[in-house]
Image 1: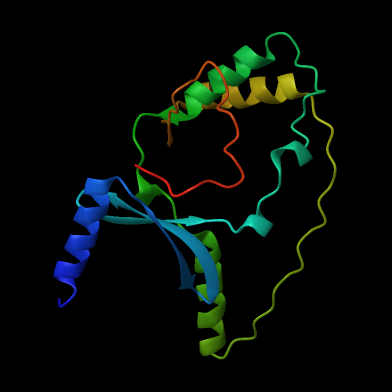
Image 2: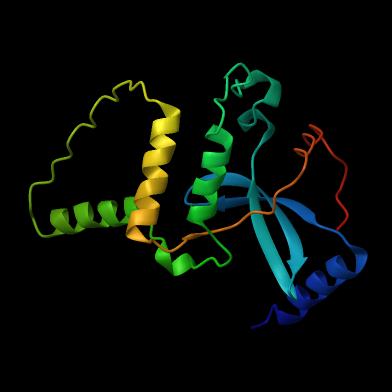
Length: 171
């Protein structure tokens, strides 16, 4: 209760000046770099990456040499449209890892023997991308599933990569 005025003053001043703040934040025993920005009358915190956690985009193989078969792009677009929605419902998603850990903790508390199976080694699969897209699209159409994810706006060009280091940001 005692920090209301300081919070309000900081949020309003940052909003008026169009400023954001960078800070370090510790959550679950891990230090993170965060950006704090004014939003909807309050302050919003976004976790970021430290420089050593970010790879240069030029180092990443982005599949430029892959040959796209005729129709694959259109079929992939149809699949994306079928999986898209204009609304996001966060209650539809749960932290499955957390649930599994809590189940193990509860088993241990109840005195049960806790065993964790070793994960299966991944097997390399060679697939026909066009067939996989058609199959996935056919399943969506056959089951009439509703669209679970928000549709992103389509841009004509990919945005340029941000600079490695930037000065203090303005809103």
